[in-house]
Amino acid sequence: MPRLAELKRRNVFRVGAAYAVIGWLVAQLAEFAFSAFEAPAWVLKAFVVVLLLGLPIALILAWAFELTPEGVKREKDVDRSNFPTATSGRKLNLVIIGALVVALAYFVWQRQALQEPSSIAASTDTASKRSVAVLPFVNMSADQEQEWFAAGLTEEILNSLVKTPDLLVAARTSSFNFKESTASISDIAETLGVDHILEGSVRRGRDSLRVTAQLSRAVDGFNLWSETYDRPLDDAILVQEDIAVQIATALETALDPVALRAMMSAGTSSVAAYNAYLAGVGLLREAGGAARIEARLQGRDELLRAIELDPEFAEAHFRLSGFWNTEMSRNQFTSGLTGLSRDEIRPERDKHLELAIRHQTDEIEQVHYRAIRARSSYDFQRALRLFSEYHSLRPNGDSGQYLTLDLLTALGRHHEATERVRELLQEREFSEDVANDALFGLRTVEDSELMREVANRAVKEFGDNGVDILYQSHRLLLWAGDIEGAAELIPRIKNSNLPSRNQDFAELRQLCAEQRISDAEAVLQRMSESFADDPRFWHGLHMMGRIDQANQYLMPYDDAEDFEALAEMLPYPHFDPKPFRKFMTRMQGQGLEDRVVLGLPFRCDR
Image (cartoon, rainbow, N blue to C red):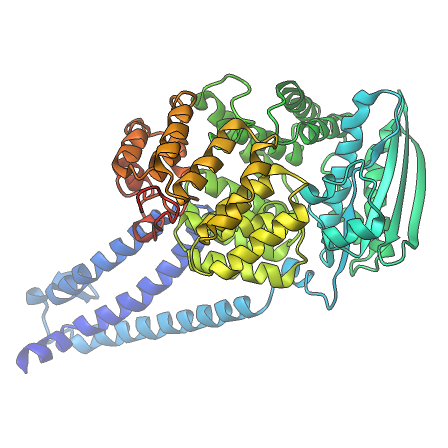
């Protein structure tokens, strides 16, 4: 085979081998660098394509040229009597061997890095877990306007305890439902799925602060620890940190108190900034999920004041970014309070998120912030990796589990979402927060028995705590095909303080499930009168079976490149993004091309 012999003589095979090994090394280093700089996923893909395109070029050059002591020459101009081909071949062999040694060393290092957990992850690996719920501290101040201070201080104590690696902490949503509750400690603990309860009170004067706190064991009400702090107001940071350290110590957690105190740092040394931050957190907490404009705007202003006093206060920046993110949403009833356009809101949200990432010293919280940034910039694949990492490092942390389920659903990976819910139900007590996550993550038809079980249990245990449980359970029962069970929830939904639009959606779902099409048409007509220029009306049209009309209703958002409006539809498993050309182009490489779209089981024309 003279042609094969000529390829060997001209070192074409050696060049190909050298290019393949060195190209692999370069691709690995590029993946590491692009990940560190958080480049979009398409950048690495483009880089790999360029490397692949370079291979045939390298082979052609190896055929046509020769490397000699005098430099690169065309192969036909090389004097073989003075420079045998074997000389360059030996050099290429050395290059290949050197590259293979480096590649092997990198492979061994990478395997070792994957097998050895980081110092952060290792700190969370403990043999046993303690659990605690922090109930809202009672405001004992004469001025009821100080309610925000008590709420803010409670939330910061809870935030500190969340950072304790081997301590399970009931989420704030569940704990705050028991504000002013007359239920016993044992009943509250059983509902929240914890073994201990922390409760207390706050009295705030002009310059003084009194905080009482006590930790009780749920099984018998035994007081494990209690303390009264009579301090100057400027000691609020120290009080919050000391309570968290004392609780962690009383529950015999793994970290020593010195390390624990450092990890639980409030994030600012400015007392004035911290007090303003507490005010902002408390006001936003007191406003809750209702569109209480005054309280929410006051909360925003207090966070702005905290940042003015300490421009490097990462938590204040993050909370403010969250306020602006809610303002942008069309799926939340607390949005649009400032009257600003989305183009005006977006820079504020992104600016404060970037500053939060820059100034955050807690490595795990940085992962959380970067996950939020990836989600808001539509890099779903990176966001999913970061949220999963954050949840594994800080299981009690805000949003890790919920937003992981949100992203899996958005990408149409419904089986994975269902499996994650099963794991969640096995690992954690069935608290209200676990119920909410499960109700959200199970919007498929994969396991109707599990769906009915979760919905019915959530209604039974938490149906009186808030309207979200009723609303989500009703939808899940219809996804599971339990039309009669869902119908039983309609009177409770219609008599709740759920916004009228949500009540209409629930009624429309039920009517379509029962195939009462004329009644459903009347509800849709009523909804159309209050849904002008609102992308959520897509749901109503889709439920009626008007799929093309529903997509045309959203098409102006695609034409205007208002991708956020379309991205907010992705968590709904029956939304198909493919008709929206510009949106799909923007989301290229994120996996939406393979998104599994589920048929709506309670559609009017199914």
